[in-house]
Image 1 (cartoon, rainbow, N blue to C red):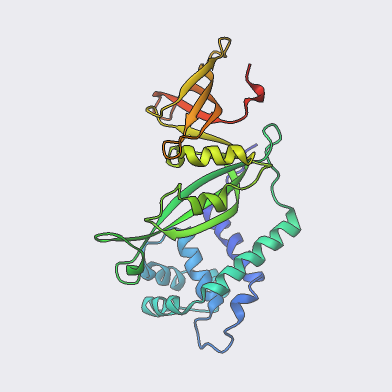
Image 2 (tube, rainbow, N blue to C red):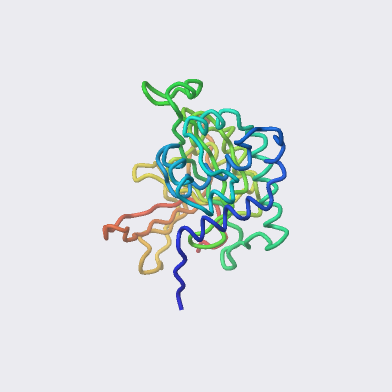
Length: 284
């Protein structure tokens, strides 16, 4: 039987955990009204409820008794929230996050890898837009300042994952930057999953030499040389072949497995998907 949990209930549970275990956030005990801990609670509630401005956060506080009790505030001005945000220590927030993750792992244990596939690590990146004034240091293009968060996610289910490695950069840094992938794609015990933004034959060859397993989604126009074609393939498989990839910069070559199959996306359109990886032991 499915149970529907209200969004407010989830928010209150999250804020409750933060309120119980916020030692690092209580380091500014001599503040007058807005402390690090209740400022963080207010902003976190605003983020979870997708409030668009500090004025909405302040308005919700003034009309919500349980929020007033938890933050020890009956009301607050939006401009005061803005000023306090500038004073929040990112080191304190980082320590709070680390403490909460450690407590979660100790209480519940970290999610386990998928049983049938072994450890899978999805490599991806997301862009976070910054303000026009305070974000000038992260200039990307005219009128747009942003940073990028490169992440390696340990998959624990079809829709669940735990971040295991993070690299922060300005948005101008490419997803396949060697320093970024050098920090994210390192584990020989896991299979790394890479999308089309991570096509670099030179890095593929290096990972192959270092016995780092990966599956990369290639573009339709990617150049490969088919060496051996498998004839007996499954009904959804269009191609299963042993191929040679060449690094255009060095001329170095390597042998990989290329699998092409079709899938139906959410718009009910059939699209081919091509992946190259170095696990040739299952080929043949």
